[in-house]
Length: 106
Image (tube, rainbow, N blue to C red; front, top):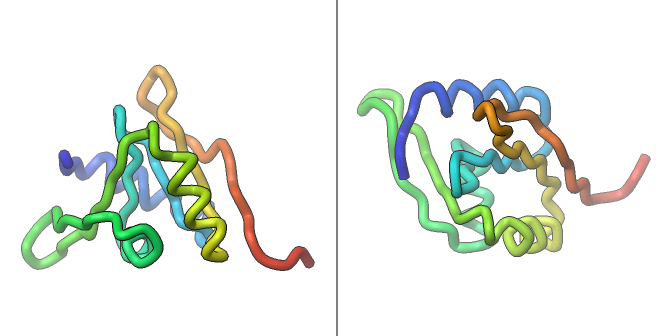
């Protein structure tokens, strides 16, 4: 999995827009998840995690092919977790386009 500070920065910006959701962000042919979200995805799905970044500020990363998106979202939703999905546009910009919310409605 390739590590890019631009991707990490964008992930964290989008995460601020959906703090109550696990954020899955498309990076090329893969969906990436970071930080505490990566731990939660690992807990539910067994997704293998990696460390990236600097030694004194490591970043936990996980990823899976875009083709597995439905399966991962389904597993996360069935476990009671809400998911925000940020797909990559033609200009490589990413925005949250869909949210799968779980739990009781207010």
